Each structure stands twice: as C-alpha cells, then as structure tokens.
Length: 155
Length: 303
Image 1: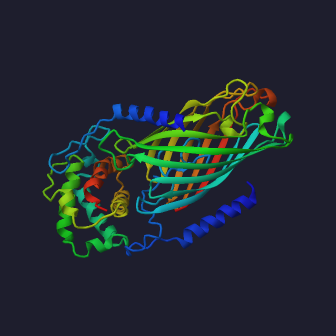
Image 2 (image 1 turned 180 degrees about the vertical axis):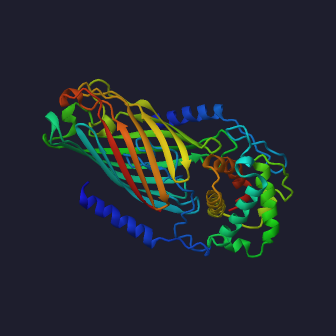
Image 3 (image 1 turned 45 degrees about the horizontal axis):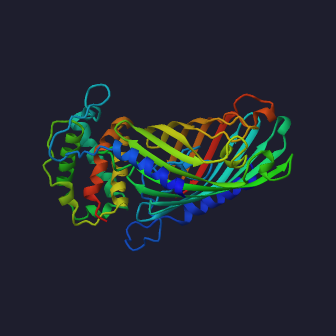
C-alpha cells in the first residue's frame, strides 16, 4: 500500500504542476472559434440559417424527448429558441452576442442533474447530425457548452 | 468462440437491456439506472476487466450511470496470436460515476508449437476510484480525470500440457496485485482522448506467467498510454501502448501495443476490433522469436 501512496503523490504532483485553469466567458464576450480550415465553426454550421435550423430541430427533438420534455412545458419556446440561436452563434464565432441571463441565474431554480444536462447535449447532437454538421465542428461546440455544467447542474 | 460463453453473455445482455429501462419522469425512482452518461464515456472493457481501453485501464468509470446512479456491463474478449489464444470475460459495475468494481477471468492457451495444449487461467478482481476531475465536463481546464485502482490477480496454475502452479515457470508467486493511477482527458475541441496510466506491478505477462521472477522480484512502475480520435459519437479510433516488467529469464517479455476501432451503436452495446501486438511471449519455449500479434475482438453489453 505504501507504494500506492507514493505513486498517487507523485502523479498528483505532476498533474498539479501541469494544471492550468481558465474560465471561458462565453456569455459576455464573443469567441472567435476557428475551424480547422481557417473559416469559423459558425461557417461550418451554415451561418445564420444553419444555426437557426439546428436550433429549430433541436427544440422539436427536445419536446419529443420524454427525459426532459417536461422542462419545456412552461417555457416560452420561441424566446428560448431565439436566445439559443444567439448563444450558439456567439459560441461558434458568429456575429451575435448572447443577451439572455447567465447560465447560473437562468437555471438556478430548476434542480437539474447531470442526466438532464447530458440529455440536452444528446438532443443537440441529434439535431446537428440530422443537419449534417461535421463531427469535428459538433465537438467544438460541445467543448464550449460542456463547462457550463458547473453553472447549470445544481443537484 | 466458446458457444456457452457467448450464450451466457448474450443472455445477461438481453436481461440487462430489457429489464432495466430507466424511468425518467419519476424523480423518486433513483433505484433504476439512469443511463445518463454520454455515449462511449464509460470506455470499453480491458483484458483485465477494468474500464478503459483494451489493454490498459483509464480513469473513466465503467457503465452509463451518472454520479446519481449506477451502471453495469459484461464483456467477452478474444485475442489470437501466432501461438496463443487469450479469451477473457467478466463484468463491471460503476457506482455513482465514482467507484468501479470489476471481475474478469482470463483463459490463456497455446494452440501451436512446442507448448501446444498448455493452458493457464487467471482470475482478476478490480477496484477503481475516481479522485478528481471530469473527462467530459472539464473542457475549460487542463485538469484530467484522475482515478486510482488495484487489480488483484490469482493465477490458477498450468493445466493441459503441464500441470502445476505457475511458479514452475520461474515466477516467485502465484498471485499478486497491480496498483495504478490513471489520468484521462477528452479534448473535445480536437476530438481527441488521451490517457496515461502508471501501473505498479510485478506481474509477468499480466500475471499469466505468475508474479516476480528470477531476474527481478520487486514492484516496478510501468507506463501505459492511449491516444484516441473521436470520429463521431459512435466511433472511436485509437492506439495503446503498455510497457511491461521483465522478471523472468525464461520469457523475453516486452511491451504490448494495439491499434483499435470501437463502435458504440447504443448505450447497451459496444464492439471493439483491434490489431494487438503482445511482444514476445515465452519465446525460447515456443521457438517463435517473433512478436505475438493478431486480431482482438471484444463485445460489451450493459447499461
């Protein structure tokens, strides 16, 4: 067991010295996300029309998803769609600024678990797949959304 | 494939898939598995039973249960090289995406050459605990997901061609425990997964040839690394490397390598196909100085 402790300490030290933390201020500053060919991920989504379609399809998939459809029952779906389009446009490097509440405030009373957050991500993936968004670009968007788990999931 | 093993795995998989459909809307039925983790984020089953890649454990916890739930699965793996066949099967349980318990049985046999008919079996019980980090959510930091684990291995001895304990081949012990630390990170921005495992071990050929030996008889820290590309949410391509100790004069043990493709059609199944190179195994005895390499196929079923 002594060797295990030595091993854990050595590796923890290595990890700690290599760890750099930074937070992505997705809600307040525009992010230029460059896709691999030089144009933005927003371009690979098909620009404003493409993002609009992805979000519209995403809301339909969400409403049909028994795991989380209940969350939309009292929501203003049109306003939610508009805000999501702003947010995804900004996150993918497009010309928009998200104008909604920050993620923590927006989800504070919802008592969300990881299963809810992941279900949403899966529905978004389904919409992106349906709309032929390249997998690399899907993952670049998910990379921006994943850290929001800390603010969105409260349970 | 051994048909009775396949039938057992298929039966358990069917029961698992059918009987444990989670109920989402009911907040109070946390007794049901939530199957909430994202596809492929439980890894696959390694040949020693722990979740990760095919030949090395990762910091990921097996199964699809989130931190509010649990998940479990069974696996069956076949690996055939020029002179040997390794079949492994087992089960794993992931609890609250924090603790993983696994069991695996390894059936190793020589089906060619001077060692034809030799059989060696080994039982492995594993435990893994996630200490920190989240491979999926921590996209905004360099922090990996970190877990520590142990694999207790008991070699059941040699049968077939020779009968007796595995110490007959030069090993000092017939059982032993490996300890490891793993750090796994998913870089979604690059669609890449990377893992580093450091394993403290004195097992020869994972324990199939016993523990400790005449050349070296104490624990050594060995490096294991995996690099994978996330083709899309259902397909992963990757490569692994596992350095090994060299404790027995009778076996020119070297590193394991593999290149794999894993398919995750749903959260209930995965299939992994790989080309594996196990290096030299009992080379002087087999008369085959070449590296033992061949195809690896693994099936996992669960929730």
